Image (cartoon, rainbow, N blue to C red):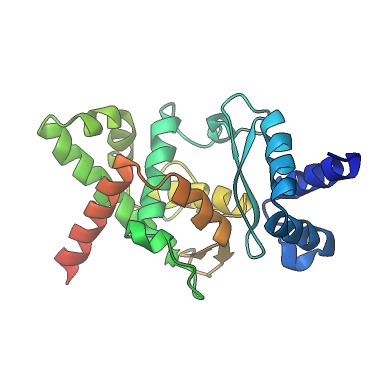
Length: 241
């Protein structure tokens, strides 16, 4: 293992820590991704550098760049405290439910994660908000039947069920209504490079998924709560048919 190999492996990891950076926009990044693709030995060095930083290489491609996961103790790990100023005391469950509703809206079936469509999945804020409301209704119904999954997320769905759908005079990203709370979480997804935003004058912005989001979600696709969200989404579509 040569010092230059370690340096280039560290550079590739460093690029992965910039979620909005893409190989197509930077020659060095593109060359490092190609080296990863072509050299198994280089992949091992990159994995070792990542492991030392308590990171995991989830996926690498010319479209998405380097997608990194983190261990809980990593200095780069996402913590829920980033949302503490914007959501309720039960922020962990609240944010998780919003994220799951978004995932189920973008990818209504697990096998949709396996493709690499030319047209990436997209959804409006109101579509995700409506699916979040349906998910919370489904969890409330399950809780009445004594099902454990619903009880586990009770603080989250109870709080969300207590919120109005939208407060016209409130900020568009505010914790006081579902529309604003969903917008807050989606704005964070945009900040970390998981979605691109097409802003609209009425506030019902369109969110388009990036390849990074697909790669990261595919690693965590087998989540029972996501299955519940997809079932709730399917029942909503059936009711509107």
